[in-house]
Length: 310
Image (cartoon, rainbow, N blue to C red):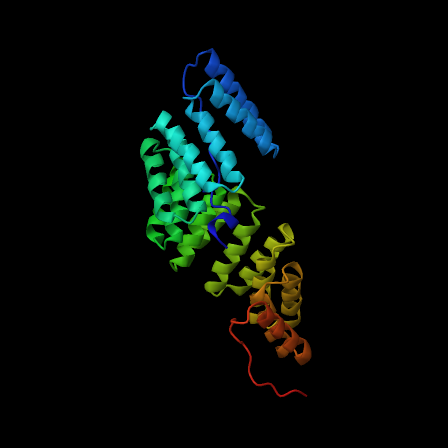
């Protein structure tokens, strides 16, 4: 999954704070912006855009109006248009940290990670307590493979906001990728202490426990993940892997079946199901599952051997 398919905080757009004492036109423009933000939270983005554009007509130099117009453009799938709006906001107010931060989000949405990193760094330089910018910077650096720097960003964000469960989970993921599984466990457990219903953290905790050979603990974590989020295909697949390692093949088959029922295009789960079905002697169903995996992704590894059918 890409950066914008999972929670990284990098996608949380800032709407900007008030820019100080305003004259009557600016006060009316600020009121329109607040109305637009309220409407946008209801999903009525076209109406929100009308409010922001009206605010710009009333107060063309109000950076916050341009910022929010950019936010709507980004939500509408126009990152280049959003970048233009954010650039205008920064012409009006070069020290507008939120506009630099949102510029980073728009660059990242377009795959320009290096430009995103530069924008996030500028936002942090302007506002050293900007926890969301530290998280977004960490996520971008992680995507670039700069894991140690990403870990440092997540730790700075947590120093600002220790109760940021999603960032504890992000930190755990980066530590896990670095092979620091004990440290990753501590991060996932901290995330779950803050937010016990965090299915992704339970799943990730299970992955780390399995890497450390604590299979029973991994099974318990995966079961908690799917109890909280029954349509969590990856957790069902992971549960199947752990159960298979414990020799509980029938239960593993059931977990894999649940994973592919949720996501029929889940190649890894189809492969795993096929192998488990072979292990329990259901050869025809096994072949069907493996063929299904190959139909979805013809270049997927063939995890098959020559079988002697009864």
